[in-house]
Length: 268
Image 1 (cartoon, rainbow, N blue to C red):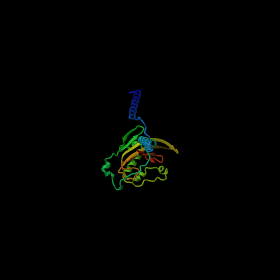
Image 2 (cartoon, rainbow, N blue to C red; image 1 turned 30 degrees about the vertical axis):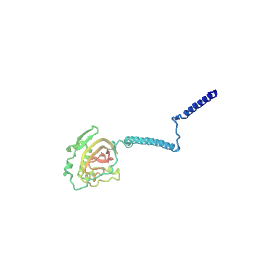
Image 3 (spheres, one colour; image 1 turned 180 degrees about the vertical axis):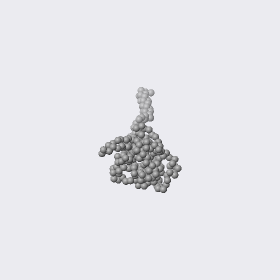
Image 4 (cartoon, helix red, strand yellow; image 1 turned 60 degrees about the vertical axis):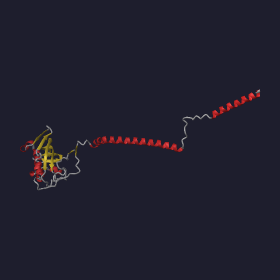
């Protein structure tokens, strides 16, 4: 083999090696690129925004609902406080008249002294002097010892129980009717089942008017009417009680008479 043949053979071998290397390079797999973001189309973007808006709306609704619950709970606790602040505690005395009173059927012929149910109630008259804060039962034979005003009030109570409107009307002075032209004598009423009767002496006062000396008496009078039929006291229901303030004096004569009956005092 001559020199030219040797060199030709070497060139052919080099060509084969390069061809194999190129083939190996072409057959090497392509390495994928990690974390490559895929493009977001318009519809996916709108869907994502809609989900985010929905989540925000839900949060807002929950916050508003929670606020309303807190407000309602606070209102439940505060309403009684505000009501007491505006209208009072409910424990004070009120002069408001009740809206509805239900009466028993009047019977002018009925004798309550034959009613065992009424006779079983406490029909004593209790006397209290606010100056001593002592309460006693007034004995029937000792009424005069408690003063002329008590005698008048006891006569009034007896007249109410007996349904005696004439005696009742005789216990009011001319001052009583002259103070208000709308005041008229009490019309006939049935026997009244009075019980739990209380007379409370508030004060007495000696006065002089037109060179005449007289004594003024102030009493609170309270009683209940069992089976009230409204013919005498239309402001009371069955077994209800209202305090009345009586002002009495002997300014128009020697006898102590009723000059004034104050407003009804309602206890809540």
